[in-house]
Length: 354
Image (cartoon, rainbow, N blue to C red):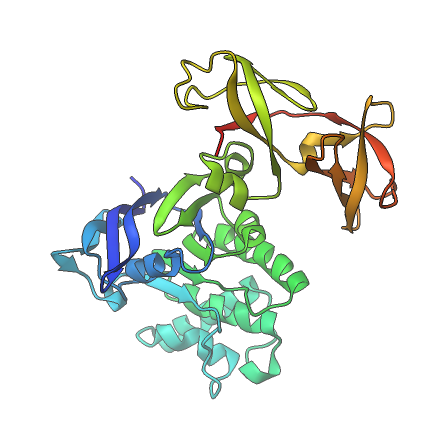
């Protein structure tokens, strides 16, 4: 049985619906994420799980117990939930040890000290117990906030945009560290973010949200390679859509050649089982386009972005269609230069014409 079950919940602010018939589930020890643009409803879902917002329909269950429904509402303090906030919310007048111990007031002193020491060691701050929040870096403050949330051993941990106040390098490093800490602690957690790099680094399963609904709840790999719809395909990763024509139930032809794969039966209105001449859009990721000097197809470099080990090239085909390609950075081509390219597509992603 999942530790967290969200079944068909809806929530509105006045006449504005912000969450619509939303469902998902998370197993014990798993890390989930609600990912989407600002205003999609993800923070409202997190607040509903925490008990800060009611649900107008559906229910939320934690450990098999209904904590929210139109007829039942367990107060936040009785839900055994920990929270890590965007702004850390540390008490400036308390040192690190006392901040971590804040939720352990009912524990005896010796047990409280032992738990604080254990958690500070877990988050890599064993020597910082007597320091105050203003003496710590942003990353250290976030670790203290995480230790404080973990201290009472919650059944579920909620993280609300926890890395958004950090610089990019620290954000990437800390997100990996937080995942390791959560896995080491065996904690079930839900992260809310608009940053897909954070989501992919931390979460086992991700729900892509749009206009109050989860468009797809899946692993990061499937979201990237097997998006359920055009919104997910556009939102996750980078890529372009190229017009194609279905040749049969397993082949589609685009400007760069033929692709073999599973073609969806609803690829175009009026198409019967993807018969011949069905017009579709094919998603091409940057890793689907391979630089190959021996290839017959030539494309012009119209833009480039250096990423250390790779360049992300924007390439223009003879038809004017543009595609993206990730190329090892020792292939440093100039704007306007033509290079050979070929397809290397493992996952054919096809949608009917928009």
